[in-house]
Image (cartoon, rainbow, N blue to C red; front, side):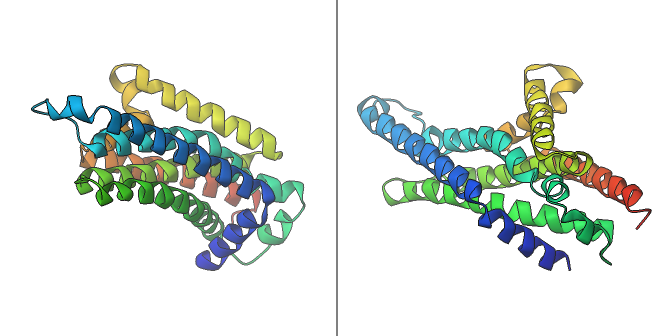
Length: 243
């Protein structure tokens, strides 16, 4: 049932013209940035050849591209997540799902999986650009894989956060704005110090973005997603009378 609901939500997201517009704009920005970074890298090949420890194409092009996508995911995920529950309430289709035999856990996990599937396609498109570097240079596969993992975990975190605010909001715009505001606040914690900085998803992503694989970063994202998914499940259970 979770898989069926995920497919339904993924189809719903793709059936919206606004989704295609946002995806097209996203790919245009990523494509333009990739080509711009590639052009800059090619223009300084002479200087790099004279350096003993010159940065490779992967760290000069792929890592900044992943960093840009991380920022775009922060801004776009709330626009996708607001459709999951808040928009269903506005369209009065939520009542059918809320009164179905599906448990709140199944509903939350199904909607989370549907949104994450959409974001995964976006990430794979960006990783495909990074993989093109292997056609003309020796790409750092490990760094690309670290960025793939980091982007996917970051997307999962933003999806879980957005789903929670979509569940507690009656209006899609309110859900999107609140999720965006909290995401930006968490992102800005990266500029703080001590324990506050450790709460920022961006800090843990940047570790993976630089090729530093740490189990602490993986655990952080797992706990972050679990926390907000459990909050969403709890809220829906209360709303549905414990089901």
